Length: 470
Image (cartoon, rainbow, N blue to C red):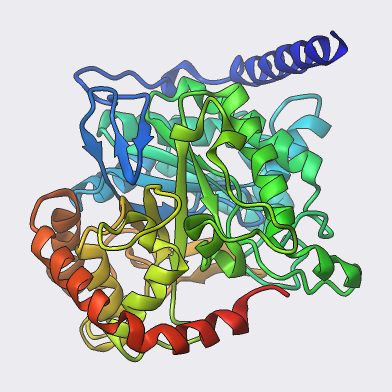
């Protein structure tokens, strides 16, 4: 009885909390939709995501950061939300991965369940002079905002504009303390790290899950971005907890926190080593150091809401061969979505981060860039979200108005940084992903993967051993 009573109080508290915050929202940012969109709620069946009408769904999207120190989605000092969303739509994409920091929700709670105005956020993060200058630019480009507009109202406005263009929102819990991600020394790496409080984490997930219920186009949420070894100088013993057993315990708590407050959204589970490894989840091997294995029964009532996500870059281990790349990413977890592999658990898989420098040659000449695009074009999995939309940041690692060479947009968010890539690479990839043209490429990759599987078995195992927690 006490348990049920407590759960009821918690549910009522969250509903009241989010309703109180939502009450201050401007009516001009309320999303309205018509037609079959958004075709939710979405569910999963084995490795396929399904809309409410039973049709398969695949993501083709882009990352729009909002988790740096200002805690406001980037670029609004240069362009309006409507202009930015129209550029995303022009690519043919159907999703944005919108990032946020747990710290934003912490501040809402410490401020009497009221969010902070964007004017205050800019001044606090950038200083009085720079903060006021950028704030004035933002409201000039986005006249629906004023000094009373809050950060969460900006998220509302983005969601509403995306809904107008039939673009979905995937909310990503990117960091605990607002900052550039990711660094194994940043204090936001792993549960109980300096800034990564498990209780505040689940509270933040619950808050955003309930807050986003008013967005008809909120399709999915992540649990956490790029879990990584906690090399914290202030908590040297924390590394002992960096293992799959702790991961499993925490992702159950996080998944429940989301589902209890918003049963409609899909829930993305990220892996270890910067979200490059989900192998034991897929193959059913023990979640070390325990003998526990991943069981759908541990997510009873919403196991059909679970989606796996992986990231792929060539920052630490450069890609030199596409067949090797394909085999290693299949072993990392993509085998869950491959018809040619026998696995213990089938889930949809989405590559929520990948990317490279935006210029006129990298996409054509860099081995990793070639390999990752070929792999994604094969349509093994349920889609992707490229890093990154941003041409610049309000602040990045303390540098104000920092340029982003990987950004699809230029510094002023006004044009594509690499028109050649947009027209010759990205737009075709979007069409290939959302259309049927990737089928034969998928068959070719899966057949080639079978042939090289045994050849690369040993080297892939050595690769995993270098990264896996002990």
